[in-house]
Each structure stands twice: as C-alpha cells, then as structure tokens.
Image 1 (cartoon, chains in turn purple, red):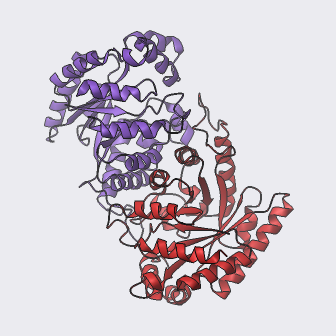
Image 2 (cartoon, chains in turn cyan, orange; image 1 turned 90 degrees about the vertical axis):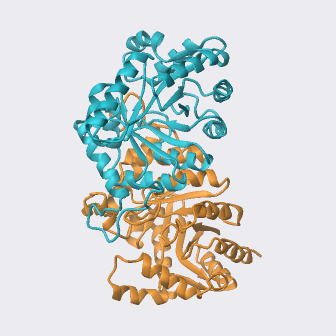
Length: 298
Length: 304
C-alpha cells in the first residue's frame, strides 16, 4: 500500500512564513511518500488549486500530484481540462485528479456556479468533457483543438471523491477509482465501501478500481502530547460552514490522534482492507510532522 | 527603461523538450530583464496561463511575472484567487495585463458570449478583483475569498490596449497600459505615440499619477536564427496567426516583429526609451533558449 501526504493548505498560519508550502512539497518528494495532495476551496485562505498544481510540479520531481479533491462545477470545464493537461505536462505525467461535488454551496455562489449543478450526474458530464478535450476533440468551432495533450495516455486518472455508497455506484461508469475520506476511521465502513466499489466496477465491466482514502491526523510527538486538541482546533477552523457545536461533537472521534507508531499500525490495517493508497491530511503546518511520519514508515 | 521577455508559449514545438519552459524562465531570471510575460491562447497547444504561472513563480526568484489574461473568459473570483495565490507563491512579483484578446474563438471555446469581447467590461472586472484582494465579500460566504496578496493593494493591473480608445477607457482603474504592436516600424511607432499621449492625458484628467507605459513586439535575431531572422518570424506567424484571412497575413508578415542583429535591437530599444516607454517586452518567435542570451546582450548594449 502506498502512503501520500496532503499539504497543509487549510491551516490558518499557512502564509505566516513564505516557505511553508515549498518545504512541505520538497520534504514529501524526498520521503517515502507516493503522492503529494491537496484539496480545493474558494471562500477560504487556501491557495487556488490550478496555480498550486503548477508550483508543486516545479517543486517536486518524483511523487504523484493528487487533487484530493477538485470540484469541477467551480470551473469552466474546457479551461479546467486545459489547466490539468498543462499540469500533467509540467509534472511530466505525475497528475492524479479526484473529482467531488464539494461540501459547500457557498463555494458555488462565490464563483457564480449554478448550485443546482451540485450533482453526481453533472460531475459525470464534466468528467466526460475533460476526457474529450484530452483526446483532442474539438468541442466548439475553433481552428485548433484545445491542447496541450496530457503526457499520460488518455489523461490523468479520474477518481471520484466519495463518502458513501450512492456516489460510488454512480461513478462506476466513468471513474478510475475512489478518492475517499474517512472521518471516524471506521474500518468496517471503509471495507464495505471498497467491496461495493469492486462489485459496481465489475458490474459496469470496468477494470478494478483504484481504492484510495484519506484521513486527518495529528501526532503526539509534534503536538506536545496534545494531538487530539490539534485535530479539534483544525476542524473548528476548516469546518467553518458547520455549526460549532456539531464540529465539537465530531472532534473526539474524527481523524487519528496518537503516536507515529500507532499511525503506522493503523495504516497496516488499511492495507489489510486492500487499500491502494492512504493520503494523510495534516492538522497543523509544522513540516516536522512529515519527517516524523517518514521516519515511522521507513 | 525595463525590458521583459515573454515565454514562447504559442510557438510550435514548445512541448518538444519537457524542461523547455523551465529553462527559458531560469535564463530570463538570470538575465538583465525586469519581467517575464505569459500570454494566453485557449484553442491551441499553448499552456494554460495560471498553471504555468504557478511553475514560473518557483522557477524564478527575481522577475516580475506578468500574466496576460482575458478576464471575460473566467470567473472573476477564480481569477482573483489565482492571482493572489501567485502573488503569495512568488513573494509579491505579480502583475496582470487585462485585455479582450485578439480572437473571438477563445470565447467560443469556453462557451462565452462573443458580445462580451468589449473593453467596458474589463474595468468592472478589474474593480471586482481589487475588492476581492482587499478581503471584501462579493457573495454570501462565511469567509472572504483568500488568500490576500503579498502586495498591499494587490498585483498591478495593466490594460492590454488595442489603441488609443482602449487606453482612455482604462484611465479610471489601470496602473498603466501594455500595448502590443505588430513591429517596431514607423507606422507602429506613430501608433505607440498616440496610445502613450492618450493614456497620459486620460490619466491626468482622472487626477491619477502617470500611467506605466509598456510596449511589446515579436522579435528574431540574426545571431540565433539559422534560417534568418525574417524567415523565423514568418514561419512563426504563418503557424500562430491562423485566425485571420491569408491575404491579411501576407500583408503583415513582411513588416511584423523586430528582425535584425543584436546591435540593431539595442538601437530599437533605445528608440522606445526615447519615446517614453517604461518597459519593452520582447516576444520570441522560436523556442531555442539561446535566444535569451542574445536578447540579454542587446539589453546590456543599451546601458552606457
């Protein structure tokens, strides 16, 4: 099983020092990680996704670069295809794209996107547009098609951002696999979702899905023994569209809080489920966390 | 006077070597140049501007990064967030040139109404971008659209002008004009003088400080064009400018761009300095990165 690391793009002190993203990206590239990942929001202080894809392509030379996840409804689909193909070129074929409908209608409002398009059906349509552009199809009356062609044959893999059975069944017809997130680390639920994906993909007569998932983490070693508090603080900042009481109620059971060795043990249990990749999502911006996880993994 | 170089994003073969754009960016950053420009063309193999700009912020340490974009083609919120992110990633080195662009097919490719290809809308979008950079909410969201740019007022905004009228239209909001000319010939020099004079007058009438006056044109140097500089420009334009009638192209090709030697380019740069230009951007017509060193030599000759 491969392990990926997410950049701390949602941290409130992300921009306090100018080199944080660069040192995370370079440290991840040097470590035992398979991918460097990040998700998307609009009405927040996180970096814009497509701009950051270009920068991460230049900072790294080895790891896969994962959008976990990108909300295609927030973008003009043809331009999104061009930007992702450009990122695939700049990274020499290292791009992986997770597509999700997103949890926040306010991000739709912020970019003037139609909130009624926040559906799996619309996402499938947009995934088809991405692939058509990548194949070099001319979707409108232009002299040349919209390039460049991606480096990867057929374009980067498209994984469906999912938390439940409905999205998995819906995406079997077009996605290459799952870009999941596990809030409460319920391994039985993860296993059930993976089984569902395997059978849905088989029924759709498609090759076995790539099964990836992710969860928040904090280490006792890098939080002064207050890992659970670090997760809680992060969730209160990140989940600002939910009532604080709800976030407080979720916090004790959301994500992983423990020692690096416990984290490695947990990752082994994900491996036992047949997980292809777990992407860890940090809840603090100290790059020391990447080194600790890297040491524990090797 | 500052001199900048554009990346050869619309030249055929730009992807033939995977590190070509990176080596151009690094060579420009090491040279006597003030800025690096990135142009946009949707329906072509040219890289997408924002993703490329993210990489350019990493490849360079020093240069201003000018993104030439057509804001009508984008969500204003997305564009403002992208440029603020780029300002963060580059440590405050971004400027944005806003223009309607030369091709209506770029609008059609993105299903944007071609009727929006007008300069009036650009001022409205520019003001909204600045509001977003100041942390104002343009829609009902819990937090504003961040991050805030490094530059306190946000990146400089230039108007990509098509002539004196579009220069005047931008006097209320732009920090200056970026005027692309067919070449450095006498007709175009007169056009530049007209645009500069119109901009100065219009900015003064608005009670604003003098506009920054930037010019851009294609170039090819004898020293770095195996087939000859004129042939290099012609080859590029016959490939790139495919949206005009062939007869129009036959008319413009012989006088398009600067073609000549390094000392000749130095003379041309001096001439634009005398005309009052604050910056000249040289747009390459070939992908060979050795052109950057030759352009650098021309810039060095203009000093002293």
